[in-house]
Image (cartoon, rainbow, N blue to C red; front, side):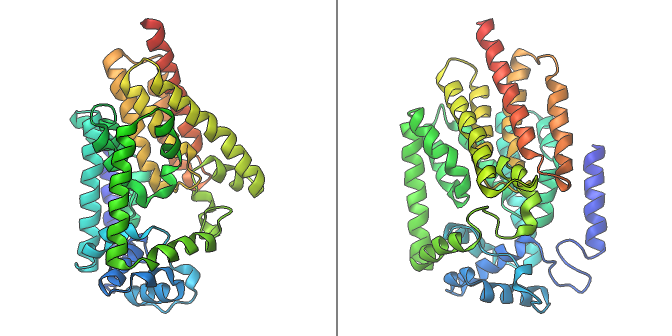
Amino acid sequence: MAFLVAYVAAFAIRFVAGKWMIDREGWPVLLDFVWIWMGGRFALAHNAAGVFNHSLFSSAQASLIGKAPASAALYQYWVYPPTLLLAAAPLALLPYAAAFLVWIGATLCVYLAAIYAILPCTLSIVLALLPCAVIMNVFVGQTAFLTAGLLGFSLVFMQRRPYLSGVLLGLLTYKPQFGVFFSVALLVTRQWGVIAGAIASASLLAAAAAFLFGADAWVLFARSLQAHNPATFLPNYTLEAMNQTVFGLMHWAGAGVIVSWSVHLAVAVPAAALACWLWMRPGPYQLKAAAFGLAVLIASPYVLIYDLTALSVPAAFIVADALASGFLPGERLALLGCFLALFLFVLMPIGPIAMLVMLGLVVRRASYATNAA
């Protein structure tokens, strides 16, 4: 509880100081939600394609925060598929501050509900609020709660309601980098129901976005991917230390792009193969789901700090299995270490190290479960 009290106090102090959500003059603070809300305004004005015109989009963001655009580089690109505009447009019907609170509140509920579905106890809700990634997402107003919630519910339903699981994965396609693992793993593990649900929902979303915002929005989105540093997946070099992936860690350490990609693939491919192998062998479902959740994050080349909210999903599955069959020696300490280590994100991309430690815990538990059987 001390963590939660400290978080609430920190947000209150920043809000009063005009450094969160709204400044002292009543203008929005330049946070990520600025471009989400502004993208919704473009969509409502029947100019969805304008979000991919950075000069136009940055000027609109500047007008919202009441400052002249000293440099367009200060303002966020719209790097998401047009499908996210389906969520941004309704938010833009509200005043900015109200939209910010509705967005954070609604998506936080989705995230917490998913964690509770995995680990149904009140304490799990409290613990899910504590990671630094959660606090970062509340601060910037990003999509991480929705991402973690959809991932969590999809894994909850993947075994017993595969089509529904796939539908939820299809909704997650607004984060295409998270589909790197699933696009292969579902085929390898022959989860045809999940695949069918994902294709159906993703196709409907894409069609709806094309119908409402114009097919040219998809063309411009594809072009924007090529324009924003495709070698590193970072639209802004200042985000380098925040890219919480093996690629990001290597690039932060000074490795070149080719070496960074090589090491990333050398880690991501075995991790994905291991997750698929665990899925297809006998064992507790919680461990299979945890391995899938970790492989999604390990395989992605682009995971910023707030995206690590999704680490709560495999962590909840690990704890659920541990509560059912007992913790192994050192597991509590390892999970606590991962939780605390992620606060070092301001110094280095610590995320991939935590992911690999947690994957090691899953493999260890799976081995013990097999030997016990």
